[in-house]
Length: 111
Image (cartoon, rainbow, N blue to C red):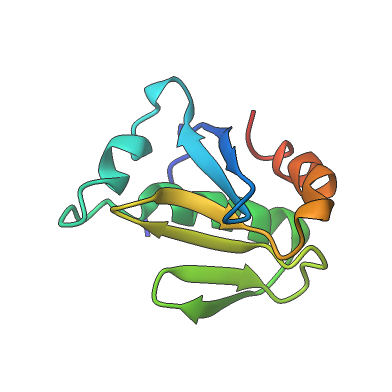
């Protein structure tokens, strides 16, 4: 897979009812346009790049948990990274009371 160091991310809207955190394209770095085009060959590039950055920096292992969902085996916060053409790129957290810790972690990779 071609890597995309130019991709930038920001923490978007929080959806407490669904326990979702939206990850968005910061300053239109390019990947956000693709996530909503399900037929695009590049549709997964932005979320995958985000996962690879976390994986490499923490030396974690990725596991697939559903068709568009991934987790890190070593992640004590148990975040689930999801993306599709309907909701975009989201992170679902297990316990909303851990939101502060999750946001602190995500701020290492997103503004």
